[in-house]
Length: 85
Image (cartoon, rainbow, N blue to C red; front, side):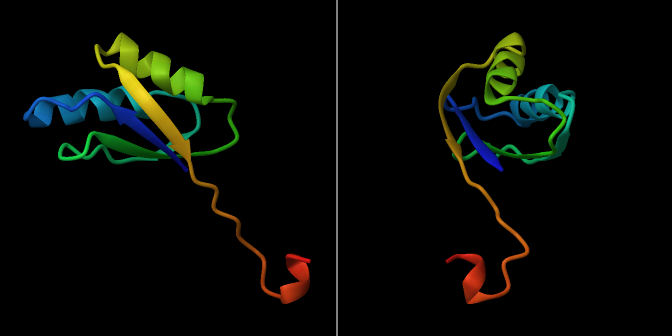
């Protein structure tokens, strides 16, 4: 999952829709939920070749500026202590 941060969105639900549409159109984007209040857009995506740079470009093309990004990795399938050793 990647958390994309944009400059504060205007107080308008249409900004949320534009950001979400721009990100959902990317190949591999599986779940997008833009938060109007904090300007964050958590994006879950598959291994279809989309990059953070692609996400930034999509938002820029929609008229928004990305100011930071953070990546949170979710690791599944580790069920025993020996998995982390």
